Image (tube, helix red, strand yellow):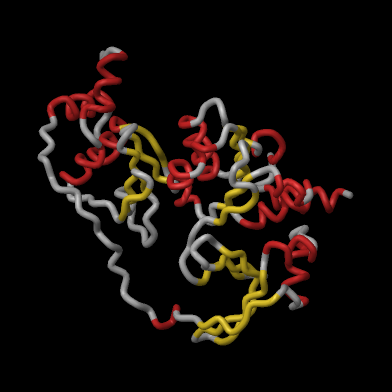
Length: 293
């Protein structure tokens, strides 16, 4: 049996970044002091595995999160006693941590040309938004109609702009993005309160339900992808006293919420626990409420 002191020592005995480097696993980039990797647990095209070196913890948003003990147990395929023995006996070489840029070949089929950006006027897009409980007023305050051309033809989608100038795109039967994928930040930056959404239709739903007057007093961040959560945790959330999470009510969303609760235990309110069940997200909740009227 291992004492609590030995377990605590094991969790920080080896830097996770060095442990991974010794195994030939290098990060893709560093952001806010954290390291982003392709997951060591599976093949993936978009890196989703983050390491927080100061706390020596990791998070894989598609699967799991934890400390050094859990990571070693999974990667070395050892039970708890064998994992502890491995950590205490390990001799990790001082390997230089380099950054491995994703080797993704260019794909001409993914090229696009934006033809025009306007208010949302296409009746099909307006009907799609209406079906998801979003009024034309709210839609056109925060979104635009993006008409773009690809190798498959010309299309129109609802676009929600990110901080990097890219667009999250939605239409009936289509979900994607144009340009660089990034978070979106809105509202009052110097507020003490922040609300975090996973997708922009949840943000639009919030505006439908509670009116957009909150933009004057509250800050908002739309992740547009859970993979950005560690960056938001490091660069944005520390500035706020109250953090309301409107993440999806699924396995990945709840793991992400738990990750944030562990870092800011006295600041976080997980809204999905309060009223979203059995709905997947805030937009699904809004649609259900509208149908019940």
